[in-house]
Structures are given as structure tokens and as C-alpha cells.
Image (cartoon, rainbow, N blue to C red; front, side, top):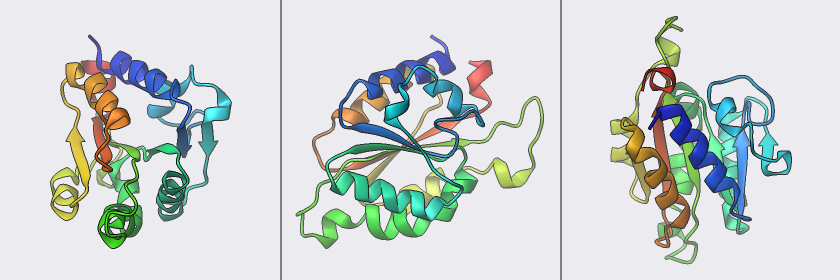
Length: 178
């Protein structure tokens, strides 16, 4: 069981659901390691966005409110940090703010950036998992360190019925190491 293979298998599984749509930077075009996990997904399921992280998270929430299950891809935590207003104040709180009127589900992918073989500098390798977990009341945050946990975690995120979103944290160094 390989880390990258499990991610690719998970993305292909998610793509089979008629409600999923993959959104973010480098989803339709190459550009990140995460792009390679989407190569077998039909282009009609992929929505390429500009580098506008807060807008992306707002679109993610809007798509979910409209009945879709967005798989919103932020290649690194350092990019997702730019969408914290939408993540913490809107997506995470929508169930509470609506008095349980909206029970939406999104799947958010991010990563602790790889440091090997080339260190990309500190603005690309942060891990804000613990801090974001503390701020979220309705989003489950899952670290994906073990390849055997990847597919079950993405399957749970897709099939959950509790009106919660899931933020899954990958590790760039593991794409080739595990």
C-alpha cells in the first residue's frame, strides 16, 4: 500500500459520485503533486480557479449549499491559511448560524509541503493542523500519515451523514517515500 496510490485511488472513488466536483489551483492543469492524483478524473468534474484562496473557500461553501460535494484543494497549509475567514467564520459555523438548517458537506484537501529532495523554504512547509482543529467546531480535521488510513478517511468524508465537512491533511514528503 503506497501513499500516492492510495490518494489516487481515493480521488477516483470520490469522482464516481455524481455530486462531487474538484476545485482549486492546478486541478485541471499540472502544477502540484496533488495534480497527479487527479489525472484520471474527467475534466467536467474539475474546476480550475485562480490563486484566490478566500474566494475558493467561499465558492466551496456555495457549491455545498447548492447540493454539490466540493473537493476543495489547497496544495499547502500555507495557502489554506489565506482562506481562514471563510473556513472558520462561514463553513465551520454555517450549521450553528442556521440553527441546524444547513447541514452541508465539503471535503478539503491540504498538505504539509515536502522538504525533500529540495527545501522550498518555510512559507511552504507549515503544519497548522492542531491550531485549526482547535478553532473548528463542525469541521473534522484528519492527518493522513499512514497510507492505510487514506482511503477509509476519504470514504468517510464522502459518505458521512452528520452535516460535517472534513479537512484532510496530506504530507508531501510521503508521496514518494511511503
